[in-house]
Length: 79
Image 1 (spheres, rainbow, N blue to C red):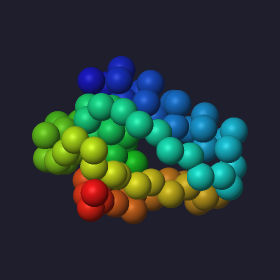
Image 2: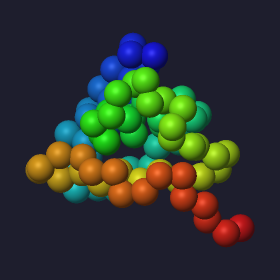
Image 3: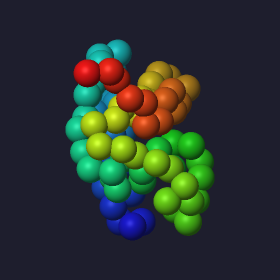
Image 4: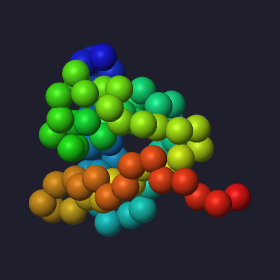
């Protein structure tokens, strides 16, 4: 799981530096989303199952010069 988290965070950080100021949408499965959210929430990987990620839900991160902030987890959008 740590290797997955390292790959996901590395990719997101690369997007952050390449797309400074742009909106980026990333689509993935629950496990990589949880791994990223745990990293940016500064929580341990042992808390992996404490984050609920439903199918087709939206979790939002925002990035600026200060770093990355978790803005929403597992949000549902009405169809």
